[in-house]
Image (tube, rainbow, N blue to C red):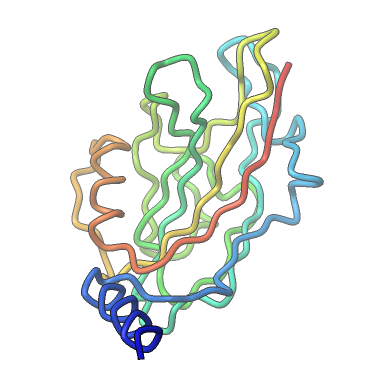
Length: 184
């Protein structure tokens, strides 16, 4: 009886919090091998000489109640005191299940119709590849797909990554992540 009550309590708290359970929701990238970024995903700025190409991303088994998606790429190891947002894409239509390699260019024509690239910590509206300080430990780059309960996030075009993150957290019903590393 106690076990059954605990199960009902967990289910109720999950439903009340607005988060759907989707244990199989996953995100992957055919562009990233063995969870290590290549020179393709390294910045061509800040002293780095990579190709600055966003990786292809694919997701599956999202909650059926998803109304849109967002992608974020975050480096918690950046020496800023608050990490570094490398890419933020939101208002990705619910019919989507992937982004092609290179979709993160400024004014991209390969993002799904309606998708918006938010302002990153480099003050750009595009993907910024990895560029950790020379000699620093390899940094972690957390790629996350957020399933949202709204079709669109209404945000100003210059909204910060933190502002966008706040809205993602307010409307997220599920998320899936993987971490890749890069050091130099």
